[in-house]
Length: 220
Length: 171
Image 1: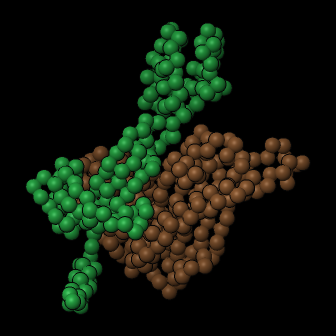
Image 2 (image 1 turned 90 degrees about the vertical axis):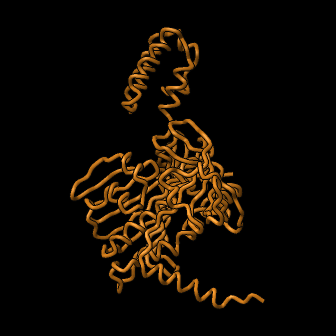
Image 3 (image 1 turned 30 degrees about the vertical axis):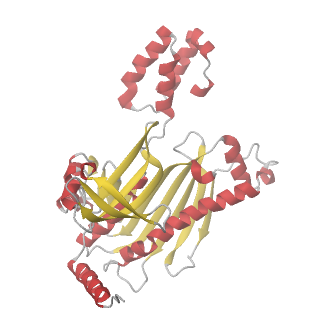
């Protein structure tokens, strides 16, 4: 089963808007009781600057620039916690305009070379290229739904490539992207209402993509 | 050359060992195990002991992130607190649709989360395999929810609860 071969699952939430990075530091989070005091004390700070802040807790990495806020984790027990943390931060900073959200599901599958080649053949027939390129291999393929066809504005983008984390494997990256409506300012928590309403369906979509690969793999 | 191609016969050839050493040293080895690597490599060369080399290779090729796999998750709501344990209703987040009841020892909660333990408080409970530098260990994690609610959101939640209670039909 392909689903049993997920080795690393990273969830990354990316928000696009106008941010003041320097506010968002570990002790500010602890002071607002959004993380434990001890977590703030042991946070690994990479940079704190007016234009960029980057630090990691034991269970999440946070990076903020003037236009982008990202929180991510490869520890699945904390996926809900990173969502809660992002929502709570911007409930405190409610005037922050946030116009876009990307929910990125990055799944690294532990596969041997034969399994990778089989998946590559399913995605694109390499024989079509063998007269021009010797031993062709798939570097990266992207499949998009743009604009998205549900009730939201944005797009869905699926990228498949060799894993950069595993010695042998592939990475399937779903970028589930949402944008506020043109009539909305992004200052009224619109993006977080979207996040709350699509959280389960986004995870479901990511699982369904894995199941779809499983089906294609079995049928080929 | 990769470490997976190594054979015990390679150990008789000191030139091969130098190549291995050089290969591993110059391919993005993390600083914090440089020293350990050096001492292990000398052990490999002097004692022809493969076990250290295999351990070094495991560290070298382990993914550079700490992660969890095969995780099962539940969202719990505390329903009863006893002197040294609490009972909670658990909603399965991995395979949604089932509700279970669980009993937990208060000692399992981190010291700073204990102040969040009240009737109705929510927490995430997960079991899975934590992987760090190739080492795998089974872990159970309880983390109480830390969400900041604005007063108007709390007010509207209380209003909804009051309306639900008023409309409850006990017959």
